[in-house]
Image (tube, rainbow, N blue to C red):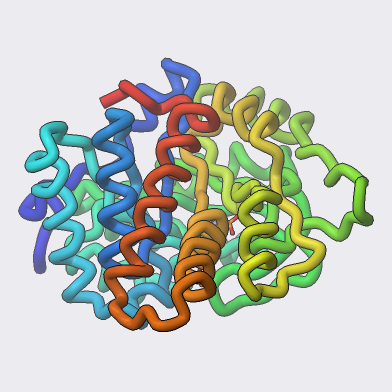
Length: 323
Ligand code: G3H
Ligand code: 13P
Ligand code: ZN
């Protein structure tokens, strides 16, 4: 067993308490490799923001669990080396079972999500409660989910989502003992969130559901998944340099800012980072077809990624200067 405190990590409890009081949200950025981690940490150092490093089951498989554990420890040290000790949470994204959550807790994660949103209410309560009972013995925080986002959650694909039912949240939180709750108010995963015709605006988020949830569990940390904005200028850059991405759509930054100033304490962003990397790599390889040193295309990708994260922290999440 490697406890997260040995790695210099923190759980999300204090960060959410401060975010709730200060009306901002903590960034939860997914990572799978060294360059993404460097970009996340250097952005958070520059903007003086706490951060949640998110690892999906797919990321664990891709990068190797042991390497990820030491990368997270390295991230803590790296931030100090850059001059600002940012609080770092290592979080399992979309944990699919008690066993996956347990294994993460035993290998240094300070926070886990158990995603039972596809189960019946009672089964979701049972599975979540089991994870909470185990996690809390080690002071690891747990995120649960009620409601299903459309799009792709790890290996589970949902063609159609359904909104969170506010009348269920109080009982869920009470019975499970979770520390935060992901809800479905109209966001979805990936770069193709909404089917909109050119010139049309995506449907607004269901702030009425969020407000109803807040009324029923006041002061309880809410999590927003599927919160990439899919910036058109990045998609245009991908297409300009040989990519083919059509009919993309994301959540507007205005709506995310509004969510961040409510009970939403954690905002998950993965796809926007993937787009930024893809655009930068394509540009270099298009302009310099003879380039074959990965540092010369992954380096610029890392710079773009950092720029994107700094923008999100300052202009979307509001977590700059909150360390
Ligand atoms: O919500 C899912 C995250 O974007 C992680 O995606 O399962 O492809 O690593 P992944
Ligand atoms: P995006 O696909 O919108 O970036 O959402 C990421 C996410 O919710 C990770 O859990
Ligand atoms: Zn998600």
